[in-house]
Length: 351
Image (cartoon, rainbow, N blue to C red):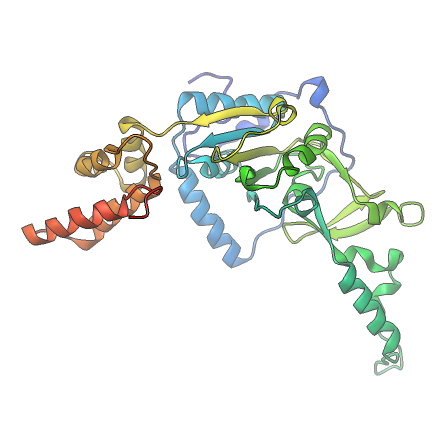
């Protein structure tokens, strides 16, 4: 395998990210003091991450996929990934994070109502106002020594940092020694403005929080909450990355994107997997010999009318059910064939 590949798609963690060359001069960022790496996750989050890592370890990208992922890493550009549902677009982000040891994938699932600010940060102005009113209306509470309880709004800046939480994109842009992985899922479901609104952030690697900028003269540093749940310091109301994040923008091809966005991205199209790649994916999930054992199921998955859409998950579901049900006699074999056909019904058919 070529020595230039940082991400190899081998499904095993390694230290390749340490050998990533410096960025091009026009993509070199200077995001100030580095933030600490994300803290350990709670047990439930650890379990979810474990499931994602298992799925990522089974991902086997093709040669073009590996090369374009590495192009995005080298050039510090977002990767726009298009392809049919279930082709592995989202899994690719988890595969890169798992293999290169980049921690939890920051996920931003886009819907029609999503705005740029949703991805950057949230400011709970109503919650802050309510807390301020309660603190002013309630009598001062005294402890055993007669001292009053501390009023959180007495903090510098009126405790505003308690009411600001960075979103997944905002957290990805925090200055860190290693790039974070951000998955912006199904960007094509957004309204018409969001792709254009992303342009400046993706180009400059920074954004500003106006609520904190107004306080910068008197309170230059404010602690806010990140998407990881950690307290991080924002200086002068400005967040600027140090290592540009590895950003995966996925699209099911439901719309076209503006040329300025396409210019800022590396475009990867993941085609419908052929029999050879499906067999490799089945082996990765179900063990050696599984592709040969379930060859008829794979052939059934590939046997489709022109324009039919199927997701690879449907194939995995059919094979898993075949494994666990233990069908043996002729009647049960007919049940297996019938349920397999139902599980692999084209997604664009309702009957």
